[in-house]
Structure formats: C-alpha cells, structure tokens
Image 1 (cartoon, helix red, strand yellow):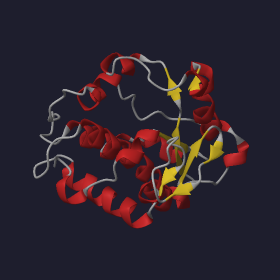
Image 2 (cartoon, helix red, strand yellow):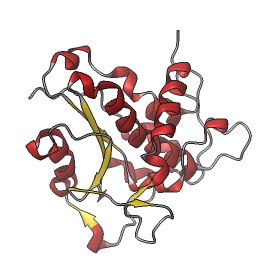
Image 3 (cartoon, rainbow, N blue to C red):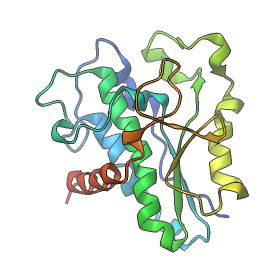
Image 4 (cartoon, rainbow, N blue to C red):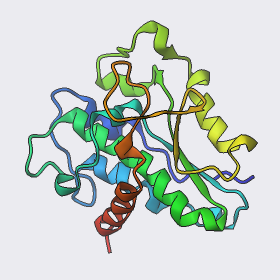
Length: 208
C-alpha cells in the first residue's frame, strides 16, 4: 500500500485559537486562519495517491471538535465574538467531515478516508495553552497517541472502510451531547449533509 501525506499542519497554525487572549487571525487567502487550515486540507491531496491501489487518507481531528460544529453562516466570526475554542472546534470538525465526503467522492477509485482523535499527548501545541491539562491517567505517550493513526493508515482491518471517526484504536460512538469526558464523535462531525456542504464551501474559499 502506498501512503501519501498531503502536508503537515504545524502547531503554530493553531496558536491563536488556543491562546486564551488570542485574537482572530486571517490566513494567506484572507479567511479565518483555522478555516483555511481545516476546511482546505483536502485541496492539497497528492495527485499520485489517485494512482495508488488501496490509498487511504488519515485526517487528524481532536476531541476539540466537540466545542463547535462548522458554523457555515459565519465561518470567519464576522458576526459573533471571536472565541478561540470555537474556532479550534470548527477546524477539528472540518477535519472529521473531510473524511466523510472524501470517502463518498473517492471510494469508487479505491480511496478511503477516516478521521481520528489521537488523544492527549504532550507536544509543542501546549506551549500556547500553559501545558497539558488533561488528567495524568488520561494522557498518552507519543507512541500511544500515534497508534490510532497507524491503525487507520496500515491495518488490513480497515480495508474499504471510510467516512468514520476513531479514538483509542476503535470507532467512536456518535454522541448528541458533549460528554463530560470528551469522548465520542459529535453527530454533526459525521453528518453527510454537513460534509457535502463543507466540501463545496472549501472549494469556494480556494483562490481561483
């Protein structure tokens, strides 16, 4: 199996959203920066992946998606106060929805996409949040955090499986309210109508 990586999103691209005093920041195309890095990721999918038999897309989301759906009528916080967690939540919901719509569009070509929550891992991201605040018993090592990504990328158990959201190496249950332990995937993050709308919205946001 050939595994292609579209591009790595650096943690600094999320620094504004995760800094409590952060202000809205615009990306290179003039849109709210997390909308550009979240909704626009599918646009950089490598061309040679289309030629790979059994290609997979692994979209790294987060339990942070539980903070917000994609607010299509105000993506860039033009009509509501900027909320760093809501901005981050929108971006992570977009990552999950990408897997849903990519699978619908590309499964006929043998390409499947899934999203995942890697869990709480101490990385450079936390330098913008005052350190990892997750209780010790729920924190993961780097290796543990990578396990679900590796499963989705390489396991034969996931052959021809797509459009789903995983955590702790298992498919996550769909939830209709945010749980106290921030587990599960919000219904809006795997909704096919939302996924299709996000895809079309992302295409409209791309430069001509």
